[in-house]
Image (cartoon, rainbow, N blue to C red; front, side):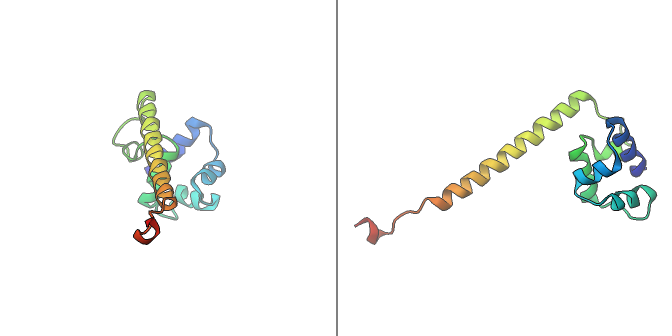
Length: 108
């Protein structure tokens, strides 16, 4: 079921399996094995697929219809906010490393 829905998502978006594999950071052969049922798809791979192709695990498992465009916009907004938060945290860590508080001896 998941494999068929994944194929459907790619077809709707006009993305070839080879392109999708590259976007997911896997080999085309690995993706092909998912689709023919040779390899089970890991939960992490489903999550990554959903993030990259703006869909949900519930859709891939057949629990809901394809998400609406407004849902996709919400997902993009949330992903953007999470990415900004990560970047902000990383900037804070880098800034903290650069700031060195002088020891008491150095202040005298």
